[in-house]
Each structure stands twice: as C-alpha cells, then as structure tokens.
Image 1 (tube, rainbow, N blue to C red):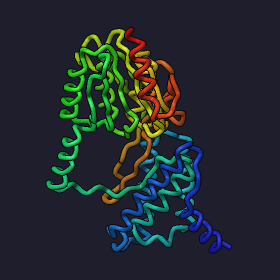
Image 2 (image 1 turned 60 degrees about the horizontal axis):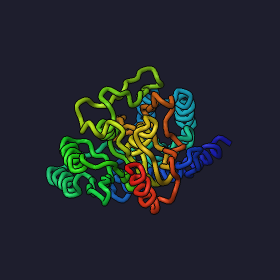
Image 3 (image 1 turned 90 degrees about the horizontal axis):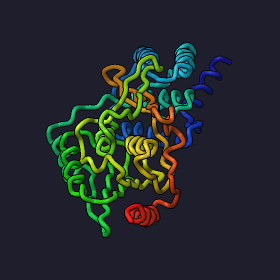
Image 4 (image 1 turned 180 degrees about the vertical axis):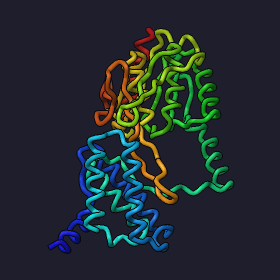
Length: 341
C-alpha cells in the first residue's frame, strides 16, 4: 500500500493545478515555461543528481522559506509537505536538477496557492558581449520611453513601456519631463508597461509629489520588519506638484511597478486613472540563492499604502473611468482639455 501511495504522490506532484489567485494560471504557465527552457538547454538534465543531493536541496529550500517567505501560515504548510515527501521518498524518481525544479516548484505553488513561487537555476554571469548587447537594447529603446510630445491644446503625452532602474533611465526621464514642463496637463500612457523597478516608480512619482511624502511601507519577513518609501527631494518642476492634471492610461496587462505608480498617484489625488483594471501584482518578489545551483523566487515584502492601508494585490488598480484600453486615450484627451478650459 505504501508503494502505491508513493507512486500516486509522485504523479500528483507533476500535475499542474489551479490556484486561488486570479492570475495564477498565467503565473504557473510562465513558471513551467521557465523550467522547460532549462530542459531544452540540457544544462540540468545530463549531470547526475543523487537522492542525497535531492534531500539536501529540499532542506535548503526549507531554510530559505522559513527565513524569507512573507506568509508564516503558509510556511508551516510548505515545510510539512516538503518533509512529508522526504519521509515517503515520494520523489525518488528525481534524477536531475530540471525535474527537481519543475516538480518541487509545482508542489510549492500548489500547497501555498501562491503562483509567484518559482524554482530557478543560479544565473550564469553575462559575458561581456551579452551584457553590452543588453545595455544597447535598453539605450536603443530610450529605456522604454517610447514617446514624449506635446499634443494640440498644450497637453503633454508620455508613453512608458518599462520601469528600468539606472541613472541613464533617470536622465531620459528628466529630458522627457523637461520637454513637457510647460504643458497644462499630461497623459501618461502605461498600457504596455510590464514589471520593472519600484525604485524607478518612486523616482517618477517624485516629479508630481511634494518632497518627503510617504508613498508606501514595505513589510518584510512576516511583517517583523519594514521600511518606508518616500518621495525624493529636489526632483521635477514645481508646476507639476501643484494642481497639475495627470491622466494615466491602463490596460489589463499593466503589472508590478507600473501598478505601484498608478495606485499611489491615484490615492494621493494626483492622477486620474482611465482604462482597464490592472493585473493586480503587488507583493514584491525576490530571487534568493538556495545553494550553488538553485534559486527560489518568492514574495518577500508587502507594500502598504498609508492612505488605503492596503494595496492592489489581486484586485489591481481600479480605474476612475473604466473603458477599453484602446478607447482610453480619446477619453483622457477629452478630460485633459476639459481640465484646462
């Protein structure tokens, strides 16, 4: 009977299931794709991986979860389940690292009902050529600042597709805002904005918010510690910080840092949101080294707005004017003109 149970348990581990999070299927499919990529590379399928290494890796994953994962009630369940598969030897079929990442990763997501958790290989350092190519692609796209122009009626239009965090991106942002500094209102188009840096969102918000305004509190390690994120001093043109109308365009694909930017400006009464409800990815995830070959990506911090005492996790940023993303610019332009005259 034990043999049958072990076999069933191993099969169940490999089956992908649905989670309670609204976007968990998307997150799960991306996690599976990342692991499948490792299979196709062959990097982790050809090296022998012993059961002793499997057991050791599980203990190392447990240690990271216990120290870093933000949900203590889920940590307890995860540790219990990981120790159970060790005790039952339910993963004795695992003989390479790619299978370990796939099946243990699936177990972690299923048990926690958290689609953000992912097991990943330790990243190899970029060669100089690859690093230069990455920098070139960022520069070529103006660090994802696609457009900055003045529309008829002296209304600024700024389209940002990603929130890169480096000094060159800040320099591009400064030039864009300098171009738009004499406008009477601004439309910020985030409809194609994906992921990115919360620090850069903080930097951009500081153009529209008075110095030393509390933007959010980041609660870490099961809320035992936290730090505050404030607007940055001495950034931007003073006109932007007064009664300057800002309209942010959103779509259902907007996520992460762009949501932080939109949600915070909305609840500080500094921007009107127009378009679609965003994806709802608030909790900040980090890639943490487990051992010399394995990393785990998991939520390590929860942003909390000082205004709402909550965030946009799951629900997304709810627009003030809800409309199809394709129609949002027309409505925003109409509202921007009405705000001036």
